[in-house]
Length: 493
Image 1: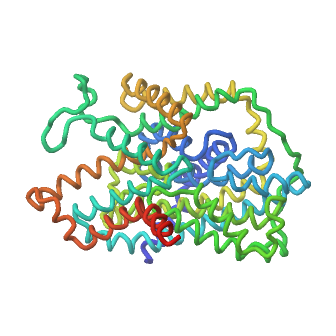
Image 2 (image 1 turned 90 degrees about the vertical axis):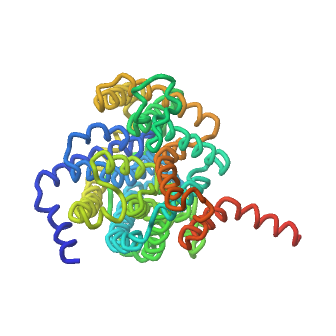
Image 3 (image 1 turned 120 degrees about the vertical axis):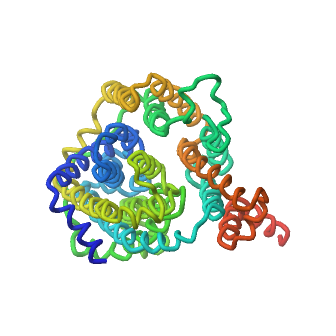
């Protein structure tokens, strides 16, 4: 434990890393306040530019963008009733009404403090829980990893508001994309159509840039003339003693909710913020204030969505199962830098792991300072005209994709998946399940092949492994449980 604390503390002694965290936090806040970008899009855009960095610096950049952009969405949610990120949608319910009453500074102060407490709490849980889970994960063999990955895919049913069936279809499409290229076991070519640049499969990075950044560009192009109502604000204020008394239980509750939701594979900050908000209302003595400017509503949503960031890093780093869309990007960053997610990460590169944790902790305090002293300035960024903003995003997407391998094929992949993501969103499909399915698809195939080798082709022996059977049962209940429960209730009725 002492070594872990020393590794986390070493972050403070690295001036370059501190400067990197500061710059990235500024960038993350800018990304967060620009409606339509968000943490996932920002991380996808920055991913190609981190490939020349050292592994620690690269993952620190991506993780810092994650936590800072998640918070920053609350600035525009409160001031212009437009959440900068999906995770800040619940903040608009009470943040904007409070701002309309002339208390925008108070609303932002509550959001800043609640977000910081949620982020710090989740990083502490990450530091404690991740090594413990890593020890358990040492017992995992291919059958257990195969079952766990199927469980992660089953969780796609609830990753977003697109609906369980649509999300699962997206996950299946992602798994299919993972099969493109030569089979690693047999060398058989699959879906290559004679293009040998696809021999190693489709790269994660251009697909992610296309699905998240390019598709968002196309969506936002239809809102060029959208006009927002701005709220004037003098300064951001820290909550008063009375405010703290009113929200401290809500913040603690939402910290636990957000961290737990974040740990669940395929869940994320958006789901956490909605549950945090609804639970804040459920337990509040002043339910009539919700929707009209309740600071408990703001605290519940903001503490939960930032707590989910640290929680989502737990399955990402310990099991290689992304806990959210943004951690899927971070997982790609880990893999391209040779940091193998899983239990061995906590023995072979333990110092790097805890330095990443320390960087995330420091990033929370940096964005707290920025939120208190510079929120008014950052709020002006949200007024950048879309005709200027999105051509810049387009240029960064193309440059980032091409710079990866100096390949025009990667640029075409970005453009193609941008169009796919755009039409998917138009028809109610979320793009995050496709991205997660692409990552988990390769894991499913590899671990199934290894399991079949272990059991000499007798696949049903996977069910004889206790831990694998538990994960498969959880996946079945996750998919079929609601339908079974509804059938039982109908029969009783």
